[in-house]
Length: 95
Image (cartoon, rainbow, N blue to C red; front, side, top):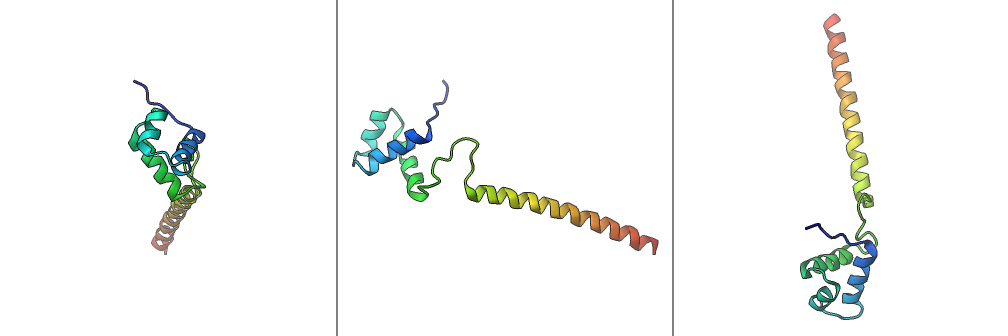
Protein backbone atom coordinates (compact mmCIF):
# COMPACT_ATOMS: atom_id res chain seq x y z
CA UNK A 1 0.00 0.00 0.00
CA UNK A 2 1.40 3.35 -1.01
CA UNK A 3 1.59 6.23 1.40
CA UNK A 4 -0.72 9.15 0.68
CA UNK A 5 0.71 12.65 0.44
CA UNK A 6 -1.22 15.77 1.28
CA UNK A 7 -0.39 19.23 0.00
CA UNK A 8 -0.07 22.40 2.01
CA UNK A 9 -3.46 23.67 0.82
CA UNK A 10 -5.23 20.50 1.93
CA UNK A 11 -3.62 20.60 5.36
CA UNK A 12 -4.36 24.30 5.79
CA UNK A 13 -8.01 23.81 4.87
CA UNK A 14 -8.28 20.83 7.22
CA UNK A 15 -6.88 22.91 10.08
CA UNK A 16 -9.20 25.79 9.21
CA UNK A 17 -12.15 23.40 9.28
CA UNK A 18 -11.28 22.41 12.85
CA UNK A 19 -10.30 25.83 14.18
CA UNK A 20 -12.60 28.31 12.50
CA UNK A 21 -15.70 26.26 11.80
CA UNK A 22 -15.65 24.42 15.09
CA UNK A 23 -15.83 20.92 13.62
CA UNK A 24 -14.40 18.31 15.96
CA UNK A 25 -11.10 16.73 14.99
CA UNK A 26 -12.71 13.29 14.94
CA UNK A 27 -15.52 14.39 12.62
CA UNK A 28 -13.18 16.34 10.32
CA UNK A 29 -10.82 13.37 10.11
CA UNK A 30 -13.70 11.09 9.11
CA UNK A 31 -14.99 13.59 6.55
CA UNK A 32 -11.55 14.10 5.02
CA UNK A 33 -10.60 10.41 5.21
CA UNK A 34 -7.43 11.01 7.22
CA UNK A 35 -6.34 9.54 10.51
CA UNK A 36 -7.37 11.53 13.57
CA UNK A 37 -3.82 11.56 14.93
CA UNK A 38 -2.55 13.08 11.70
CA UNK A 39 -5.13 15.85 11.84
CA UNK A 40 -4.20 16.56 15.47
CA UNK A 41 -0.56 16.85 14.38
CA UNK A 42 -1.48 19.28 11.61
CA UNK A 43 -3.45 21.46 14.03
CA UNK A 44 -0.53 21.43 16.46
CA UNK A 45 1.99 22.35 13.72
CA UNK A 46 -0.20 25.19 12.48
CA UNK A 47 -0.60 26.54 16.00
CA UNK A 48 3.15 26.42 16.70
CA UNK A 49 4.25 28.26 13.56
CA UNK A 50 1.37 29.31 11.29
CA UNK A 51 3.51 31.09 8.73
CA UNK A 52 5.98 28.26 8.21
CA UNK A 53 3.73 25.26 8.87
CA UNK A 54 3.75 22.52 6.27
CA UNK A 55 6.83 23.60 4.30
CA UNK A 56 6.53 20.72 1.85
CA UNK A 57 9.10 18.39 0.45
CA UNK A 58 12.43 19.98 -0.37
CA UNK A 59 11.53 23.29 1.26
CA UNK A 60 13.16 24.17 4.54
CA UNK A 61 12.20 26.53 7.29
CA UNK A 62 14.42 29.61 7.65
CA UNK A 63 15.92 28.20 10.85
CA UNK A 64 16.93 25.00 9.07
CA UNK A 65 18.53 26.99 6.23
CA UNK A 66 20.58 28.94 8.78
CA UNK A 67 21.63 25.73 10.58
CA UNK A 68 22.80 24.19 7.29
CA UNK A 69 24.75 27.33 6.41
CA UNK A 70 26.43 27.36 9.81
CA UNK A 71 27.33 23.66 9.56
CA UNK A 72 29.02 24.27 6.22
CA UNK A 73 30.90 27.23 7.67
CA UNK A 74 32.06 25.16 10.66
CA UNK A 75 33.31 22.41 8.33
CA UNK A 76 35.21 24.96 6.23
CA UNK A 77 36.77 26.59 9.31
CA UNK A 78 37.85 23.20 10.69
CA UNK A 79 39.51 22.37 7.37
CA UNK A 80 41.36 25.70 7.41
CA UNK A 81 42.43 25.12 11.02
CA UNK A 82 43.76 21.66 10.17
CA UNK A 83 45.76 23.06 7.25
CA UNK A 84 47.27 25.74 9.48
CA UNK A 85 48.17 23.17 12.15
CA UNK A 86 49.97 21.04 9.56
CA UNK A 87 51.80 24.07 8.17
CA UNK A 88 52.86 25.17 11.66
CA UNK A 89 54.15 21.68 12.43
CA UNK A 90 56.04 21.58 9.13
CA UNK A 91 57.76 24.93 9.71
CA UNK A 92 58.50 24.15 13.37
CA UNK A 93 60.26 20.96 12.29
CA UNK A 94 62.57 22.85 9.90
CA UNK A 95 63.64 25.40 12.47
